[in-house]
Length: 489
Image 1 (cartoon, helix red, strand yellow):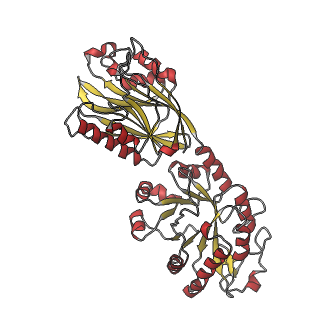
Image 2 (cartoon, one colour):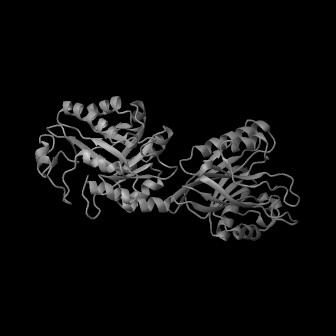
Image 3 (cartoon, helix red, strand yellow):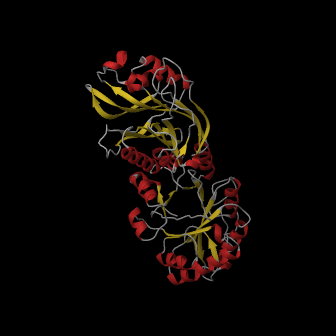
């Protein structure tokens, strides 16, 4: 690929099948800048395999006497490949001393290695030469047993049409296009230079919404590679595959997190210092809190009257605090909140469905920036009286969490128990990260109303769930729920 055009590349299952949340590393023209290597060299192919690169990109030309060669530019050391015969081309040497490789010699080595192949059919001066080259490439790859490991890309519309008709493999036309147009022309994935995504960051979501894979090229610095990882790229095409592999493995390693949800009973039963000390004692990474006042003149709140609970708790616990107003109350606000060890990139509040015209409830949802990883965490508090309202609220929050481009956790007081349609609606799509311990009322628990859910289920594992023993003089009428989980990014 060159930087004169914006590329679109599709990689499907069987060639470059991405694991959930882990970008695949594509060695651009092989690991060509490793010691003893060169661009599009067999040594570069071997080097890419040795570090565990997921794929190798290579470029193919047809010589004047119809021999396929691997090289990026139309000329090599002043010799035009299309216009030269193999007798001349066989005398050329790469910078590492290797002969200019034929596709046959390259594939012969590739078939004994692990990386998939991304074959770019170069744009020839005469489309008729492409008509000859395309079936030759397809047949040779089949003969080497590499069909299922190969994807095709090209800037030539002629080659594109031929490859689509003949290869039976993923093929993409390397031409700039926006997501909606890509979808209309039948493209299955987007491969753009990183500058395009920086200019059009909204394309990440548009492409995901359209079900397209995302490849970003040619990404060489640690900062640019991390940008691709943080934004959920499926593939990273790079001249620095070893660095990319290191950053991907570090960023996408499973992460241990402690998640807490706690209904505070609007601070009626305990002073703020006690509530904060209970939260801090568990050392959570994220806390969903409900029944939270902000500057409300609530008589029942006693010493907490008039306080901004989220600000007070954030200060006392050393966490970041975020508030979601549900209603105006007593000269202030009443709602829910989030405490987080990590800063938020974005916080959104959504009004929950309220067909029964009950007290308004909300979903507070944030995208949080952990080192090398992003996670969505949300807090909510369901209605407790109207069946249709709770049912709609369960459907709404489930759909919202499933829209997340990152692993997502939803916690809160759902005013519902296991077996009820409200909870079962959520559990049909999300994973329950709690146990069966009852949480309300705190002194003599009769119901389990407080839950922690996660999406997608396969990215989460529950290691342990803590619900303290019932007690008199508790800080709230709900017991807190604390879960130790593992997230696979």
